[in-house]
Image (tube, rainbow, N blue to C red; front, side):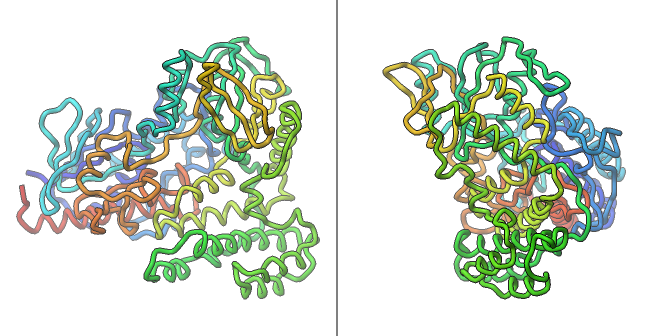
Amino acid sequence: MNASLVVVGAGPRGTGFLERLAASLPLLYGDEPLDIHLVDPHPAGAGRIWRAEQSSLLWMNSMAEDVTMFTDDTVQQEGPVRPGPTLAEWSGLDARSFPSRRAQGAYLRWVYEGAVAALPPNVTVHEHRTRATRVGGPRAGRQRVWLEGRPEPLVADLVVLALGHLDAELDPEQQELAHFAERHGLLHLPPAFTADSDLSAVRPGEPVIVRGFGLAFVDLMALLTEGRGGRYDADGTYHPSGREPVLYVGSRRGVPYHSKIGYTWTGERPPLPRFFGPAEVDALLSRPDRPDFRRDIWPLIDKELGFAHYHRLFHAHPERTAVPWADFEEKYAAADPAGPGLRALIDASVPDPADRLDLEALDHPLDGVRFPSYASLQSGLRTYIQDDLTRRHDDRHSVDLAVFLGLLSVYGQLQRIGDVGGWWHGFFSFLASGPPGPRLRQLLALSDAGVVRFLGAGVTVEADEAAGDFRAGSASVPGQWIEAAALIEARLPEPSAERPGSPLLQALYEEGAAAAETGLLQVDPADGRVVGRDGQPHPRRFALGPFTVARASGAFTRPRTGGAAFRQNDATARAALSFLRDLACRPVSA
């Protein structure tokens, strides 16, 4: 029997792993026969999220020039660099446009086909357009992967799980809301991927409470407006079709994610990492107890992002500073990241408070802000969104782009630490992974047209048994409520070890795989091996992607940014090939 490898999930992460496998296979494995089985019910390359069968109204959240599936010399990897085109270069699309997900799916399919073609003749690839339901087998022997609708399992020497974003079973709150909706004939759509949600039951003109103001909401907004025949004219005004509902949207923050930055970098880049790099992570990992995020890690991150911000301010806008950069840098470096001296230094060196970085204030823009009515809230939020759009497209505020680069650097370092809690990922997404500027301009137009109305921050949703409907209130307009017969949770399912939406992952946990407190699968950050509750990595099982504690900072990698996902893919591919090579030198257990 040939050596064999099963990859569960043939979307972007499975494709990236396959590309890295092809790059290192001739040197590490040689010309022994190898069977690779790819298991995914969706088309290989595009996978579920980027499949062609979805609305053309759904966009990528990255510009075409910022998406690549190929390594370059900035990636810290052992495998060979195999350069290739960005999405913009391959497709011919405007480099600074936000392509449709269909366009990205076509690019991913091309990358996948190229990775398969790059494999040598001794490797055979088998595609299985179905779901994997369970992985079993002894640590020291071949693994068995059961597929939906197939009585006999695939037998494999190694298994790589590249499951992508996963569903989850309803938590107790969502179950209660679902039962309430069923009893009263209401509509309740729980957390899900918007492209997969059935929105046909959302009735024209009816009020809909929407909880969630991130990217899932942006998709929902597009599908329930343009997707129902509305249109924007040349000056951006929205003309309703009459088939739209009225979306009352709110969230914990009460505001949409910050707009994508609409200008390019010029001049000197901040030298990152500076205060949160490999040495600092080594020190944190050497502690006898696991570091606490808020106490031990966050002060270093705050100082690192501050360094990126002030490096840019002093170099690109020195007229807005009061001391020479060299003096500021020396004192900044010496200051305790958690002490009062750092704040005093910044206050003395940067005269305008608007030029100072306050990450806590950025995370809670409506904290303590109260509006006398929903009408005044609408006006206040429109001003906030317009101000954000203006700032994010004005390079006089290029400190924002420097902080973005700092966030990418920090995320790469955090992957060595593993799970640091869900707050960090949400904070990163709010600052660095917001919608394209045109989407926020559409949001403003929909607000002007009365199709979207804002609820504010600290939103709470209740099931009103007496009235038989849902009602929502917020801290922004205390004591006032919106009633509706429809509730949509515009957010992705939270990962859960107790309620995973994947039967395969459920079986792994039942067998002994470990989960972090956030519900993400524990893996060895060095090579992606699945870690058991005994703390030991499984020698024959690997996992890559957003369902693991080693999730990367975004769906795709920007060119020449180091590519943490590329580094992970390369390390896992080389570990798998080394294992298979060594296995070929000894008898194989059945």
